[in-house]
Length: 226
Image (tube, rainbow, N blue to C red):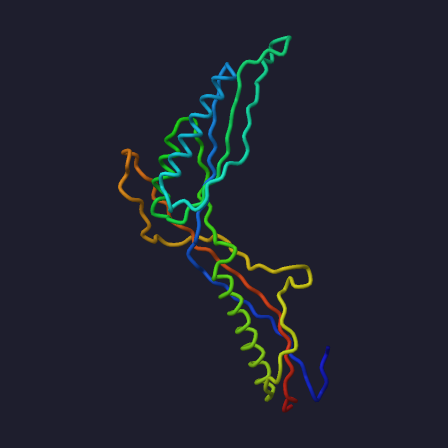
């Protein structure tokens, strides 16, 4: 593993950093209702949830995924009452929407926030797990490792002979996935279409995603000219 004078080995680390445009934006939507009567609270919650679903689905292919998460109806007990007397019922539904068309994102976000007792969080920008950006980062990291090893060998008057090992930094612990981290980007010109309901659409600027890849590589080389 340490090489010999006749077959020296060189170990290097290859790194790559790419900045790419996001591929997807996620919104979390919370629909709420409150009422003194349980049936009335449920009916209001159902009506508002249907409004949100209809609005999001109206954007068609711009919405890649729409999912319903947690649903809850919680009674609020009157703290001043000696008995279990309910003062009000609180209902909530949590939804998640993933969009790939960022031109519609600002308008949809604004229209959702304009609905009754509806909370919108996001957007959270990201890349798909199978994004080509990950592969490009890995390839660049490998090329950088080869170039670094070639430069070390050249400094000794030697040349590379063979590759003996190539590993992700996390290879011993499990599968390695390059990391995507959100970073600010300059204005990109994304803008929503004409507003449908006279609600001023938010101007949301996508965040550039930074993808990192790291590899370890070991090579054999010819004997150096010392």
